[in-house]
Length: 377
Image 1 (spheres, rainbow, N blue to C red):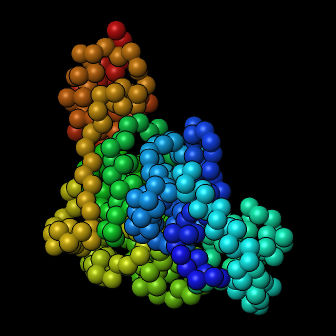
Image 2 (cartoon, rainbow, N blue to C red):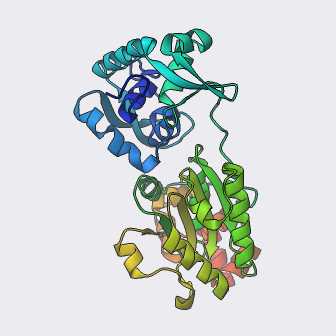
Image 3 (cartoon, rainbow, N blue to C red):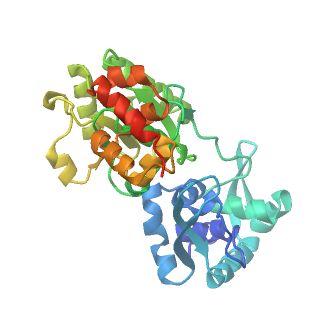
């Protein structure tokens, strides 16, 4: 246990989780019980949460499981305090009643004990403030900052089915020591849609979405990142400062046809990557001379790759909009389209023009696919 007036990371994790203790397991847990929720509350990097709670789990004070989380469609890893952990947390709070803490109030540091803090803000809020101590100081007037969400240039959410394995891999990346995830897929296989879906689940991170248009200069990309970073932290003045933000998620969409300067910029980002997480959706057919990373980066664990294939039959059937499609008809559609989401969506919408312009199918094949997708058992 830390000295009086100070709390260790483990102490603060216990206090934080004690606020969400229940006698009956809930159907949905609050986001505060996830890795990112703990990281934001306690003030540590998300990747450090598993290490921080390892001892608590070993001592039976905290449990780890997979459960539904409010506001999220998928099951996630959550942490819950045990009955013994709750007993320890209550003792921490009782000890804090007489312990004196440095407290930031009205712009000045004053000395208050836990009882004084509790009288001013109430027990529940006082426990939250103690768990959220920063650099040994309790910030009495500070509320959690609303995350910066720069998604103006991100695509709108559309129909989305399946991809549970891919989304889980993206979750694993966020919890890993890797700095960058490259989502690879041929055009029309849904790398952008998948990434947009994943971003929606990251509601605690500061996020910026940058579409990589062929004519977008490297200097403008860098300027956008610095502008975003400065909104998250006023001390940000350079790209390196942005990469050091431990709550930042940088999204670069459709890496394919870029200038030499942009390739060099991304090479620089790889070499100086720090706390920020980076996800790049890229086309599989990107020319070799445009790649900005090497095999050694993957082998060293700096970069992870996620290769996207077509949808499986159950999800393809839903995207086609025909749950009762004839089995043989679905098999033929899958053979011809390889489960490519873009084509399946155009078939669903009877988009003849889109199929002519964006696929290699002949007019006869297009008519046949449209016929097949409407067949029912």
